[in-house]
Image (cartoon, rainbow, N blue to C red; front, side):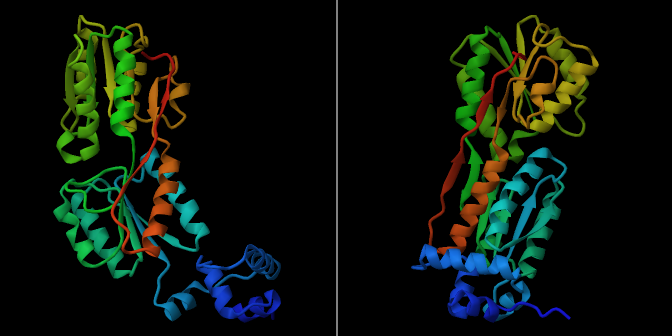
Length: 329
């Protein structure tokens, strides 16, 4: 029967103490030389050593678990976000507990309590609510919480997001440069999520400086989106639709393609997100790419940073978006 490799075996072959191996495994390098780190890495690889995380957790009273709650796991944004977070946390020896709030405020609250019960060391959350009071209990539990994608009011936790205002204004200026006379913003309800409101007001601020009309369509379960698109097609002014997120963009494109609407001859369209699919649709869709996987990477790095330094002040990290200019406006 093959003998399990222990931390003592690794320490002996690497000619260092078990404490040094433990520090290396937990990413606490301190004054450890690069030569020592390289030697330990080589020995771990040669011996195919796999640390017993359960034993480590019991001994150190740490779980090495990070809870991650996304608002809708079926969304492409969530998949790329989770991949980015996982790359960073996995390399640091942490495991993710992935949970889907399914766009339910009640379910999100329940999941947060379940993560606390599982002794997670930190939580990364794409919030479903904008009111900070709903998340105060996490701060009271003294568990590090990092917001991703969406902020709350007031912003009492650190946040990683894209540059919503800058990217949106840049896109709207492109629309106006092409002599569009009306912009129709299609969004899920603004009041629910801070990000949606930021994007709409960024558009409004730019449009109001020009001789251009602005309409807002807030989509709910009762909205007949086909009917709203029909209205857009009947406007006498040269019209462009701005979809506030990838879900809206794909739903609108599905309608336009099904109805064989010529882009951009009959109507222009743009919005968030890119996801590398927009280049394949019709003439190619001009859109804003949020670099979602990079947002995930930054989120993972920030969470590790907060675990290392609990006194670190709350801060907002902005990951630049990319304008993908194609032929839809």
